[in-house]
Length: 354
Ligand SMILES: *Cc1c(COP(=O)(O)O)cnc(C)c1O
Image (cartoon, rainbow, N blue to C red; front, side, top):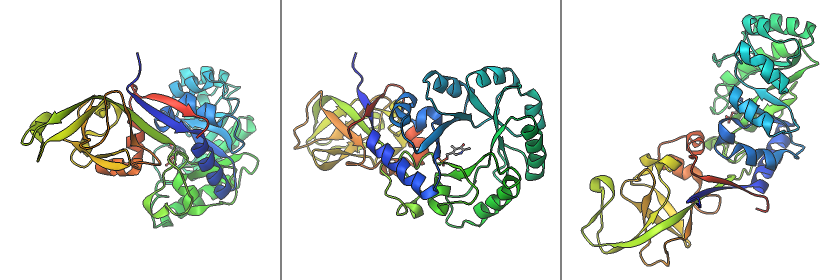
């Protein structure tokens, strides 16, 4: 059976973004590939980036993702960004995964061979040790030869007012300078775009920016390209007569006879139901309106006057049609949500040529 929708990833757009970000940060990247590489497909993103010199390694959020990634033999380091449970540490460490630690309990549970990145909480208040405690844990880990890196996470680098991010970086520097021989990283994508080179850092962790998106006020910093183009197939084309309604709730009434294409993509595939009433799709060089409520598996599209047939493929979003940023805005979503919401029925395809 053939899929009815495809997320095509441009290897060249991804390589371009990574080059731009790494150059701006002045360091190689620890590429976040959590949540199936921000919805782009873990295996495809690894394939596209495994040979790139800009990518030092990969970061994941969940132990299951770390195991999945290790099975792809990325030939590059993998860092788990959240705590492993004590009974998972040995297996992860055997797989070569770098563990994150931020508490004494985690340090106590570490297998002897585990290598770790120490997480410093400088204000995100999510994970990690406060700076004074981090200094203490770092010394213990360094003595045991287990400390491979030290890092923090910025809570507000996407805020035009960078004062809180700067405070976080100062706190981090206070700890980091005590461990000059291990890897250090702090910047997410917004951090790279906002700050560029940061003293003392050896890596950066841009996620969303690597896949082509910047916060609005930072959009001119680098020419990032959206990596994903989403395509969906037309299932049928039919006429809706003047005065008739379309889809659940009859939200849209045809003002005149209308040709409607039923497209085989719905909110279960990540096309946001909340974009109902605003969504548009690029068809043969024109923007055409989505008609009525977006359904779980399908939506209807006005193709009046166009040459559209069952079986045709349409570009639902992408670099050269409707920017995914716009679709996210119609749905009241962050780009993070739109991309990670792309469903399992959507086939991920790596385009190595484009
Ligand atoms: C997700 C994540 C990142 C990447 O953040 P972006 O905003 O996508 O650049 C970096 N570091 C940590 C710890 C994360 O959880």
